[in-house]
Structures are given as C-alpha cells and as structure tokens.
Picture 1 (cartoon, rainbow, N blue to C red):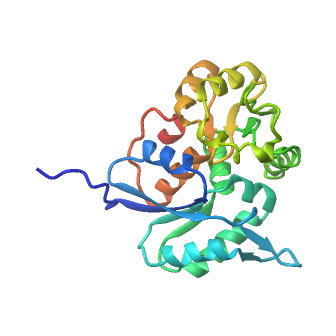
Picture 2: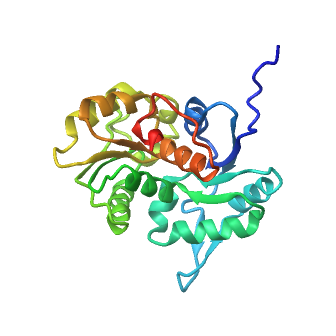
Length: 262
C-alpha cells in the first residue's frame, strides 16, 4: 500500500515567509488540497523586502529574499508568492508588480510570481468586496495600521472600518513592536479574535479582510462567514487560493471560506 508523501505532482508552490514565524506554513498545510506541496523560504530582511530606487520605478531585492529566490529557481515550482503583508503595505502602490517582476527575472523558468498584497486584492475582487472591514495584527504599530488602510484604499478598496486585534490583558501593556519578542506569535488565540471581529464589523462592510500572514486566523473563516453572512478573506487563504489558480489547480478546498469555490 502506498502512503501519502505530500509530493506535489499537481503543483509545487513556493512561499517566502518571515524567518521567525510558524503560522504561514501551518495554515497553508491545513488548507492545501492533496497532491499540492508547499515549500518555504525564510526571509529575515526588514520590511519591505524590496527597496524602491530613487525614481520609484524598480526595486532592489534584499539579500535574503534574493537568496531564497535563487534556491527556488532550481525547484520546478508552479507558483511563488512573497507572503508578507507588511512588505506590500509599506511598499505601497506599484510595489507588488515591481517586486514580482524582479523576482521573476531572478527565478526564471515557468513559475508565476506574485505577492500577498496582490493576492488579497485579487481575492477581494473575486469575492466582489469593495468596502472590507480591515483586521490587522496586534504587532502592527499605529503607522503600519494607517499604511494598511491607505494601501487598500489606494488600490480601490475603501475600508468600511478597521480593527487592530486586542490580544488581551497579558500583552496589552507591551508596545506592538515587543509582542513577538515576548512570544505572542506562538500564543495566538483565535476565539477572542472571532469575537472581536463579529462585534466590531460595521454593517456597511461588504466583507472582512484579515491581513498579516503571521496572524493565526484561518480556523475561524467558516464561522465568521456563517455569522456575518459576508465573505471573509485572510492573508494566507488568499495567497494559497491565488497560487492554486495560477498553477491551474481547481481542486476543492472545504471549510476555509467561500473564496475557494470561486
């Protein structure tokens, strides 16, 4: 009897992720359909992972991102995403396209390269969401929260409201930049997140967007969609969905939102 070995004979997807995060791979493997494999390259560079030139026409890849891209070049991948919401948000308008272009030139081959910002935008369009309720991780500081709201507005999605998740009493007195260093990234709870989103979602929001690939949340997509009667898009869900479609894979994915049926 042949046992499952997770060999990606239908698609092999590359995922650039933050070096000290465990959530992206865990969520991708939870959602990935059979015969699709996920391969991560860890990036320790500051955000954004690619820097604009003086004319803001091209980007220069940070060394760690370029290193991972060179490794991916030999792996016969079908699609690759730069899975970092913060890089897209801080890079701003045009960054996603410029970074995908630079990565494609370095990786070569037939793999299609995208970014998390581009993936969430495509997911919002496919779901016909124009005024999302934007939910952001607790480790986003005030400037990054404002940049997130501006990023989606600049791309045609005017948030109906936004929420920075309150991680609770244990973490509340720490500044956002210190949360990960004190272990909050590995002690995330999704039940309070569900309750806060359900309570705060504006009536005029036509969907929910949970940004942040290190933000644990895919386990509550189904419950939120049932209770809010609106599409729920998350960072990792959107990137997996788009990479599957870019790879030509239409395999069903159940339990992780209506997006996978589109």
